[in-house]
Amino acid sequence: MKKVLIFLALPLLFMAEGCSKFTEGYGESPNNPTKATPPLILSAAELGLFSTYTGTLARISATLTQQTGGVQAQMLEIDQYQLLNTANTNDWNNLYNNVVQPANDLIENYGATNQQYAAVMKIMKAMALGVATDVWGDVPATEAGMGNITGNLTPKFDTQESIYAYIQTLLSEAVTTLTATDGTNNYTIGSDDFIFGGDLTKWVNTAHILQARFANRLSKGDATGSANTALGFLANVTDAGDAKAYYGSVTAELNQWAVFKVDRANYLKVGKYMVDLLQNNNDPRLPYYADKTDAGTYVGAAPSSELTSASEVGSYIAGDGAPIPLVTYAEALFIKADASFRLGNLGDAATYYNQAVIKAVTQVTGTAPDAAFIAAYASATAATITEAQIATQKWIALYCQIEAWAEWRRTGYPAITPNADNVTGTNAVPRRLPVVNDELLYNKANAEAYKDIDIFQPVWWDNL
Image (cartoon, rainbow, N blue to C red):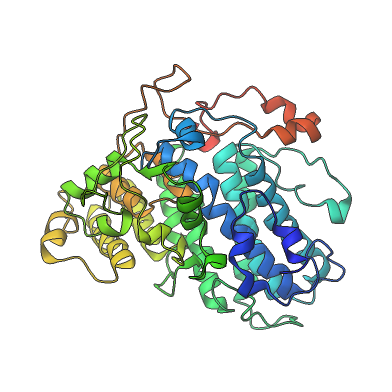
């Protein structure tokens, strides 16, 4: 992978080794924007995005919402809410150095003559900043990753409210560019785009779902307005193809969950709440979400149980070459159901909910659920549909995705019980991560105000 590895190498960035087949042959580091080409920058940034969405932050999110259970070492610490500001420096650095910075560099150095590349990078930048602000609250955004352009290495922290507006601006600009009939593009996006292979229609579709995701997030402050806005963004969304993080099937190309499962054996298991829920529902996703134990059964790890004999995370997420969902049509359907419910359009809410559940099951198992499951869990009506149904099924569909933690904070469903055996003495599930120590060291003037924020303090949209 030559110099690309310099750009991607972080201690937990398994993806750096995981995509040699993608990056082999690229001879210039994306850290040097005067030499790197748009295709190389795009490819490297997508690897950074994969790492952000499928790495440590995903495991933390899954564990805090009890989709998984941490049973040993650092995952047990997370299970017990020991969230330290030294623990996620690599995640912070990867997000900013390997996604936001190259996005800015490409837009600044090549955007005028490669408008489609710039547009795709705006979507990816929006995705990265969305994770950052949902996890940490106020974070650098408008000035972040601009060191090569402005020389500013100490970016200000933007408010989450302004970041959400900025994300929508990035996505709107990207959609406008990608749907234009003219424009300047010296390079054509193709195989360098690991997500969609240069299919710009799918990128537009994904951008609209992201617009709806972030609009819907504001439901606590404006239930009606956020619903109407989200539905507007989804008006023309189709089942064109989900955005996924892709991996290979040989040792050097495995996804991060698969690598973690081997390298950190018995650190992380499927959570008891998830296993019990799927078993009680006769949910066909269970054998895909969880492996059987040595005893041939499915067993979940309860908080602080340290149950190393519990089921491992299954092949849908932790299979050697398993692609991991980033943005899906099933999510769009759940947003439609949720928004319609808030507007009082209960018939529409039920219809979208039923479609969402069937789609979510199908994307995991490859086949639609059987008639019995549909009758029990995908046959809601205007008279029976509830917010809890929508949110709980969405939580199941977002298995091992960072989005599940954000949605749990927004809705409160499913009604998980906080780990009583946690190290904080607070009977609540954490609602954010502490600002990372590197920012306190190297961007002290801007980060100092956030050093004492409690992990139980809601972020802006969670406190509207």
